Image (cartoon, rainbow, N blue to C red; front, side, top):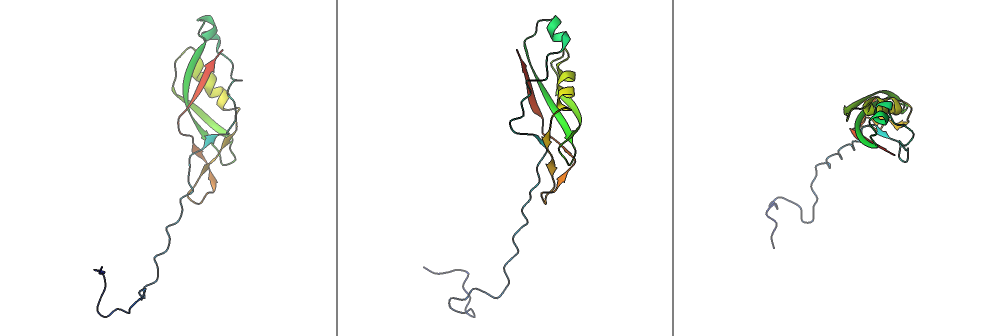
Length: 121
């Protein structure tokens, strides 16, 4: 077997003289996210859903979270109506979150990825 990269002026068993390239920095960034294990069963049902006898719904939310994990705002990006979106937004403002991290792993203000809140009774 022969090495096609070998050169006639090289040193047998040599490893070259150039310094190794630096390792790329590890990117530690991530979006904010709800705390693991934090339930959403305490949000309650909106009165509009009670009037229509609706027993389940899904709401997709995006929450802006500060660097300490406190929600600053919440927006329902998928709202089934009957007051569920507004109820989920208000409920999110009472929850705790893991903050977004910058590429160095330092907490910063940022948004969650869209996530689903399930209402059932």
